[in-house]
Image (cartoon, rainbow, N blue to C red):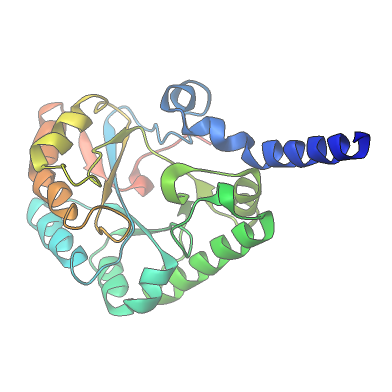
Amino acid sequence: MRVGRVLAAGAAAGVAAHAVPLLTTRESLRRRYWPGLAGLGRPDHVALTFDDGPDPATTPFFLDELDRLGVKATFFMLGINADAHRTIAAEVAAAGHEIAAHSYHHRSQLFSPPGRVRDDILRGIHTVAEATGQMPRWFRPPFGTLSNAGFLAVRRFGLRTVLWSAWGKDWTPEATPESVLAELDRDLGPGVTVLLHDSDCASAPGSWKAAHGALAGLVDRVAAAGLKLGPLADHGIAA
């Protein structure tokens, strides 16, 4: 019994160590203690980021709308999607947008052993770089859940992890352009990083239309506040 308790305690400690960065998923804690991780940057700028692409059924609509609006953004690409849709991935980069990594598979780091987490991150980075011709500088974990192994691996591979400080909750089946803007209005302001999705591969089918339809309104809101909207490369996140 005593041995069993010791083993159980050891296993629990291992899980806890693996999941310590899970605290960073709390947005209030992130903003206060890890502003760089929260994507807080220059007070005159708002960073626009997209997750989960590239997707040939949806990403081109975002590229067209961003071009119409005259806005550049950062695209956190899944390696598995970049691998399958290399032409679209290359088009995102060719349009002048910043490329970032979002792992190879869209799965939480908390439910994978450390070795698998590291391998998935590295495979995603390499695949996205090969597909776009642009080496990512930024990494965002799927679901925003970051394990200790993932955090250390990203640093070892020379990337920087960034989550977000405003999101549109555009992945739900009930999402509309109006609901996305209403959600963004809760936190939109100087220095924030906005999270939207250019693919519904990990979201409710068709939910991408809510994010796409909200882009013009987001641009108007940022301009009305006297702020600039652009990629993380221009955001000035402190080290």
